[in-house]
Image (cartoon, rainbow, N blue to C red; front, side):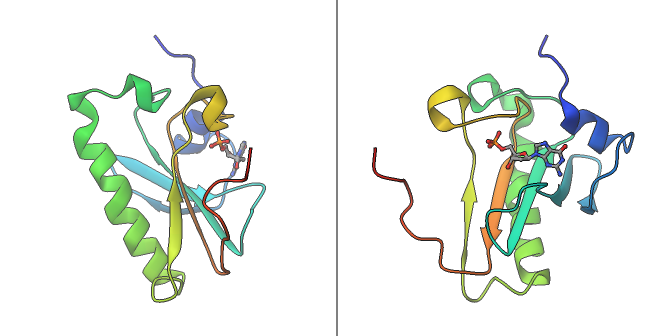
Length: 117
Ligand code: DGP
């Protein structure tokens, strides 16, 4: 059983966050350390630690991450210029919080996809 993170407390509204969207499957809130003018995290409500822990039971919630990302991008006014969706996995992916989440980044050109090693 995966360890809960701060994101479970945000989902249950036990600690504050700027929540922009929530339904029965996913929650979206602004990243506390934004790397771009728009930086939103979209997370499945059910704890899945990493992409490596994903199973077929998660397919509905993980599909919802994309529909909510597209909806929020339109609402935030960044859809026509474009944006980036990122899901980091474990150490080499740079994952800090072990509750799977999608970053929605936009509002400026985001540069190269991956920094040179
Ligand atoms: P990652 O490296 O992919 O695991 O990204 C984790 C992100 O989570 C990072 O950009 C900062 C953000 N974050 C960490 N703790 C909190 C928090 O308590 N509140 C909010 N809103 N964001 C957080």
